[in-house]
Every structure is written in C-alpha cells, then in structure tokens.
Image (cartoon, rainbow, N blue to C red; front, side):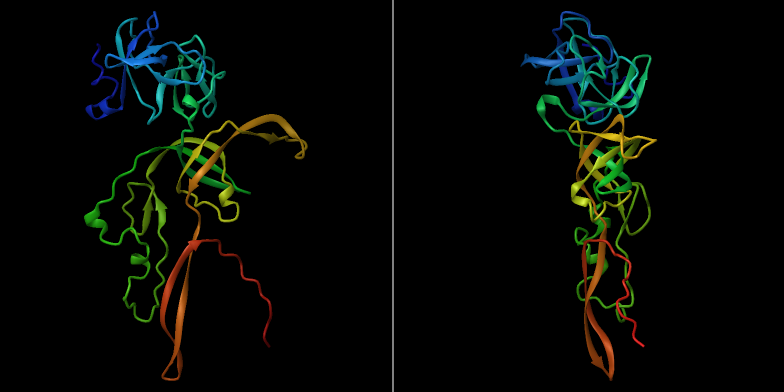
Length: 313
C-alpha cells in the first residue's frame, strides 16, 4: 500500500479522516477519481469500484493512481476535496458521480463546485444524496434580501473550543455580562450592548466569534423562520441543498421569468437579530422618581421607528 500520509499537505492529524479501501473495479482508479462502495466491508477494507450513478456511498481517490487489486484511501467529506470533473461547470454549480465514469459531471447531483476544474480537476463539497441522507453545510450570512431570502457564503468549520479559565464562570449565560445578579452600576446608568459577531481570530472584546471560515462562494438561501426577524449579517448558519430552484426574473419584463433558474438552499438554523429591553422598578426617593432596579430581557426582535400618536400642547 502506498504511504500518502506525508504527501499533498496531509499531516498525521488527518489519519482519522481516512476511509481505506481495496480496488475491486477491475481497472486502475485514476488520481482524484470517484469511487463507490457497493460491496460489503471485508478483511479490514471497504470495496471500491466504479460509480453506477445511483444513490450510494461515494468518495474520491487521492493524488496517486491505484491499480486493480491494490489498496487506496480517501479523505471523508468534512472539507472540500479535489476530484476529476468532466465539462466546464462554474463555481456554485451542482455536480455528482456519473454512471460508468471516474469523473463527476453536471448530470450528477450531491456536490457543489467550490473551484472550477482546471485540467479536469476541481474542488467540491458534499451537499446531499449519499444514500438518501440530508447533509448540512456551514454558511455565513452575507446579506438579507427580504421575505426570508438571504445571500449566504458557503463556509467550512474552523471553530475553537473556548478557554474555560479565561472565559470565566457564567459564560453560557448572557445575563452574567449584561447585568450580573446583585450588582450595582451606580444608578444603572450603563447600558452594555449585546455582543456583535467577528472572525474567530478576533481579539476584540464583547464579540461572538464566528466558528467557520468563508470559501468565497455566495449562494441564494431561504429561511421561513426569519421572515419577520432577520438573521444577523456576519453570523454562522447551517443549511442544506434539497434540489429546489427558483426562476430568475427577466430583464425586460419583471413580471416574467427569464427562463433561467437559480438553486435555492434551505437554511435550517441561524442566529436572528436580538433586542435588549429592561423591566424597571421605580420608587419615590426624597421626592423624586428614582430607578430602583431593572431586569434585562433579551429576545429575538426588531426595533421599528417610533410612531407619533398624539402631540401634547
């Protein structure tokens, strides 16, 4: 078996991400070729063969050809992977395994192009279709388009476990930051803002650090749960591609479709805009109305402009 643990920027920490297999296809599996596991696991190895184009378990060979009867290995789909792609699909297009081929193509489904093919090799991430399962991918909210639609940048996981010693007790409770129990802030004159979102390597205080890194690919996404209360631009979200498409609007007559369609991802989890209001207790102190105490109430919401109802003369 060829040792590839030190080639192509693959370190020892990546070994747990490997699926080892035996080539039972009857021919040489080319570098970056698509393999399908159709036969049962045997003698410590998965059985890799050529795609039949149907729903199943698919992986990609590494950067070395693997002859028939030899052992190979594939990295699992926890990141984008290099793969043979036929044709010239653009970034953001859906591709997938093709029957009788070592290549992915636009006739297949289940993967999205993150880097267009160069000399027949491109980068893809898995979206769905593996055995009928639904695969969620990471995203960063890029822009709100209204009516539940968003532009989302596809991203990859780059999170860091919080330092429990530096984060301190009560870090899972936002109230410990906004208004610690029993504290006194000199008449409650301060109004600490809710944390804002920032990149995971940010050194700023009062931020929620993003746990993913963008890939530069922007897609259209829909979230029926945030039609009224929008998602926070710059925050992480999770979404899936279930194959739906929207017709694009024509340029001459906005009431008519242009005849083209655009994939629509479905957002299944995201962070909505939040508000902080106070429930206040007032009393008369030395003949003056005085704020005695207050409780911060944090909830998803939007602050609308003030509506003047009556003007007192």
